[in-house]
Image (cartoon, rainbow, N blue to C red; front, side, top):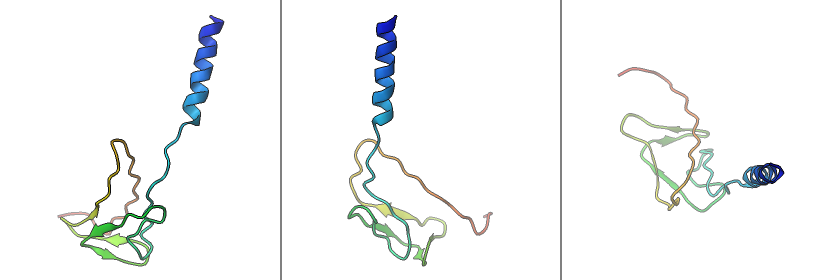
Length: 83
């Protein structure tokens, strides 16, 4: 029983110490360049001082290899809703 508890504790410590390295961060503060890596976003919308504004069927594209596992964290603000 003590052995199983020891293994469980070791696995918890190992799992909590693993984390992903940040390879790209796009703040959209007047630039489509990554503030961390060398990648650049492509888009057909309008880049303002602190946002990327786009209409229907527009958006951003990243032409970089991200690998098999990645996370995208985004914040949206909508000016209007509807068709």
